[in-house]
Image 1: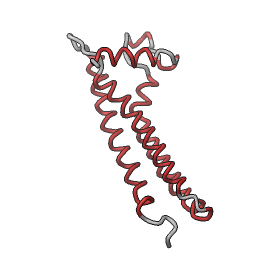
Image 2: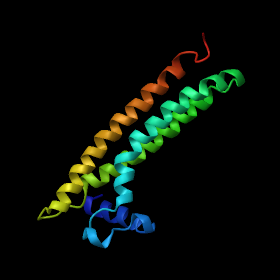
Image 3: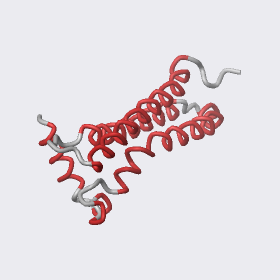
Image 4: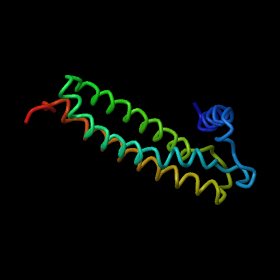
Length: 139
């Protein structure tokens, strides 16, 4: 699938949501909600995962529900992966002959979002890995 076609599909899907529509002042640029999702979701989900995993350990051990921690890790990893894919869509963008400042900014921030997303995904998975290998309830 060509980059132009992929961009058109993502744009059509995003146009269904009013918050994702481009603001007229941006002259065709990417909306604020898309930027917030692509750049901020990874670190936010990682932080929530870190705190929630630590908070769930005592309750999971008492009730024998350590699988909840693994489920939280998988859901967090999925959310970060979606944000990373959205950032990759911004980084790839539609092919244009004359790259404007808006296009260059979108691609640069998309690349930064991909880097942030990959780091956040690795952190979530590395924090969840010991629960799979070690007994979380051992003292």
